[in-house]
Image 1 (cartoon, rainbow, N blue to C red):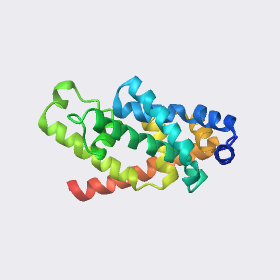
Image 2: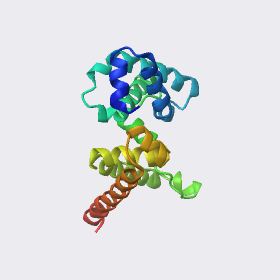
Image 3: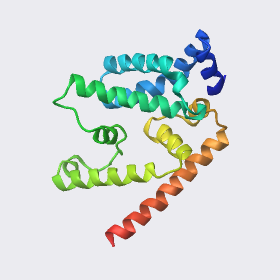
Length: 192
């Protein structure tokens, strides 16, 4: 059953459609919540809230093609709200939290990572990267985020977004290519 059929089934109060939605997207919702909250119990609570929100407001979804992105956004927003409400001392801006959820795995030694210069460089690099990712076409961005930052396999991306294997491979390739061009252009203009 594709996303369009699932959405229509949920709108008609067809229980198996809602169960299918949960089964199909629970990993995405839990993963995005856990990366922000870093607590399994809290992330599970947010998952339940996300799916309840989806059940209540599925009729507000403008395009069936955006179901995964919509779920990711709801999960991210609910996780950030939860963090701000339950731990205001550690709460950060949503952009800072988003940046932390999809950090690059930097392979510097521990001593270099802890210097103020390195911390600033890493923060700036993340900002440049996320700005470049935001500039990608929507499908490329969605596939890249699922593959590289949510650790979805290409098969899982195919199932989640109802795309063929070749489409997913092509979108990943084009996203990487576009990022490479964008980042090379940025660094040529700002470092030379």
